[in-house]
Image (cartoon, rainbow, N blue to C red; front, top):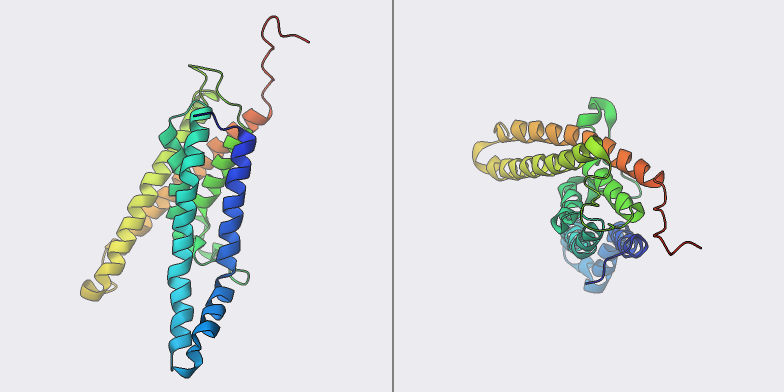
Amino acid sequence: MRPLSGGRFAITVVWRLAAFVALSLSGPWIAKTIQTASDCTGTEGACAAISVGTGALLRPLILVLLALALLRPCWRRMKAVGMWGLAGFLVPVLLLLDWRSLTAFGLNYVPVSFGLGILNSGFPFFTTLALLIVLLLVIARSSAGRGDSLFRRHGAVGVLGWIATLAAAVAGAVSTALYLMWVESIATVGMGSPLFTQAASAGRVAAIACLVAIVGQLWMILGEMLRRPRAAAPGHAT
């Protein structure tokens, strides 16, 4: 399999992200189209059900399709820069962990409020981190061979950035699992279940790890932008 260049990776990923945003924002139009086609006005509550169903099912489905569409190009590009291919799965996983934000945003609604502080603001930390990784993969030079890895190229800060990225993904997955368990337990235990507090605590840990990872990713992006061109091999000088 041929290594995936940064330029080709950028084209592949950008059109997928653009399609996700376009489809997500067109949700109300899709709902209206279904309502018109089904002539739901003659049945009480049918139009409302279609509208709710479109919002509750369509956007999560689109997000899952985006994550699946990003698996292969991210895996190939990680291999091209000398990383483990599995590291490429971090990008779609991080996007999925921000499902509550990515399935709710719209032209007239941004689910972010800094009134309770940045860690409780609803800011899409995972999405921001995922996009920075994508940018890094776009501008990073491909590996020159064994030992030339993006993981080691930027010293301790770069290594810390990748470790923090993995920690953010793990803490985010734990927070999401606890949150879904809390939602499931509402019917039997009620709103007072400790699972919500545990989910919130894990979420704050994930947010802090994201902030550390974002600093590391920015450091690597800056390093790749300022890197010196590799010297030409003997006999290839012009």
